[in-house]
Image (cartoon, rainbow, N blue to C red; front, side, top):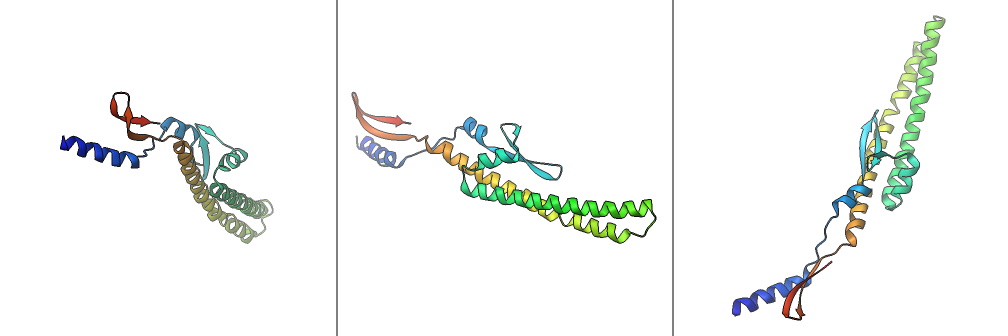
Length: 168
């Protein structure tokens, strides 16, 4: 009898503090995003579909920090692409002048290559920040999908005496 009372007291004490959360894996997978690298830049997918810039911004508005991070990442990408494009144009003008007229325009081609190469760290910053934003968003999705599912195990009186009640 003493053991039964001790076990019921321990269960009663721990059942008041037990508040478990279950991760609905399919709901999390449906709403989470994945980042893959393609062509040197990160691409963001959700449920197997590639998201464009507008869709990603609308989706990431769920978490303010993820939204700010992805906006910053897109700024780096736009600036990096612009710098690389300008460098490519300058480089091609220098090479075209060298090939067409025979003018010594190698200096212009080298300057263009240097400008184009300076855009690479900006694209790398975009990759790093977009991956961080996706991680922040996935954490927010995880919290939101798990926050409404709660399990409670209580010892309560029932019609047949005392019983364990599982509520969710």
